[in-house]
Image (cartoon, rainbow, N blue to C red; front, top):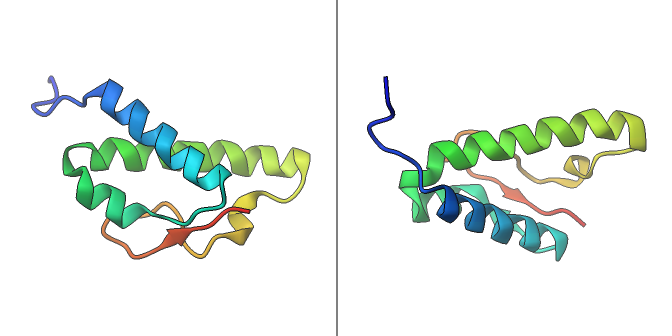
Length: 87
């Protein structure tokens, strides 16, 4: 069955790029705020970021400590409070 609410992939890509840029610059990113600002992308955003964290966690075992160990929050339900602050 087709998704009744298709995701704007271009908008999702832009939002993910902004999220990753903020993390790279060491700025805190509140996932709940991103989801609240983009409710139509919340599920897709959460899925993408969870996949990113899974890959990073797997690579962390190979390359050392994963930056998520520095988090004060993480990818969870978009309604959950949490800020991610990677150095």
